[in-house]
Length: 322
Image (cartoon, helix red, strand yellow):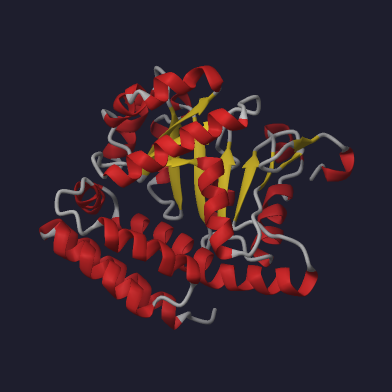
């Protein structure tokens, strides 16, 4: 296989920075952002790093604590592989391919694909999801948000097989047992996000013990807005010490509620008071896509194969990926 010299250099820089952050998170993090800006060629990386540099001028930023916690508590091979797969394969190489195909063929391509796993489909046609991932990668997509409710034994080998891609696995705490944790320790291109319920605490404790990168997430409806914007939702998550706190709107959630939630998420990020990176999955997916491409594109397939965009779900068989 042809070696990618740029990726090798990026990985070496990330590993060196992770070691430095353990000793002096403030200086090492600022230096890393400055170095990234010096060599950045993509418009998304430049935009993101400029925001980071501005934020890190705040010497009391809680993101320094987050950086140190990741550098000291998470496997460096995992942080490096996952981060470079998103940042280099996705936002640099993949983004260039996405823009080229969009210009040549006249359709939009998302930077990330949302995939609901159908256990029966996976068991009956084991080649279906690997082929779906391969088709997506051929279009420049290197980040997959995967939603799975059942047994994970057949899914994890597919994740490991796509070593040049990054996977975020949205799971329930009950799925995260000792066998799962053992398998995940050998997978360097995936992060787990744990649904917030009664099983979250034990699951996050196991993920921390395994030095794994993880998030915590919730779905929300209109009636959940007051509880979230009051700060109660975030406070309930902080005790689990995730790197990311994620919110995802339910299908029935109104646009007004989603806008209110997103404004709250942006305000929390800008305040830099909490050592966790908060994101609203749909709105931030669209934000990244608007920077990478000229238009905006959000694409997913639910567990029944139906096409989902940021506007609606299509039940017409013509748009069903099965």
